[in-house]
Length: 148
Image (cartoon, rainbow, N blue to C red; front, side, top):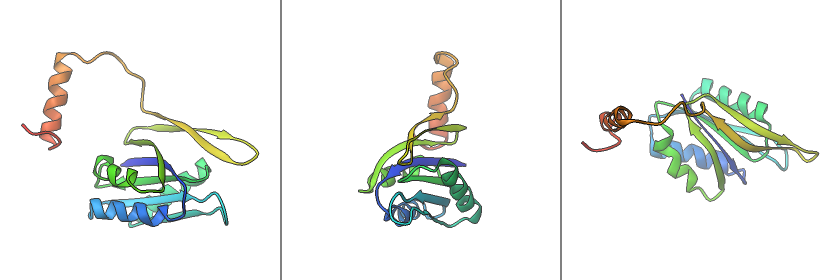
């Protein structure tokens, strides 16, 4: 499963991100939650998979940062939808797009909560050598992201 976490500034985000996912990868399963930070200040939810919608809702509630969105994807990679999402006029920032374990760094003030950043995966364990280059370039061609 993959996740995209970002910041947006308008309630229209919910429908626009859902349309971007479906328009980019029609077979993708997804759950989306957007934390509204004015008006009713509700977590708005969309998607086509009940488990992913619940996962998005629960994580948005835990994060609790206004104008943030979290999108969980199955049968789709972030690279397949990321440009469509980044090109939405209301999307301000993408904090991460990953399948790694991630931690969201939050700041809290009297006004509310905000995402400061994301810790995405683990720290580097070394430097890529020739065998690593061969493995990486072969993998990208095997999965169709680069031509042979």
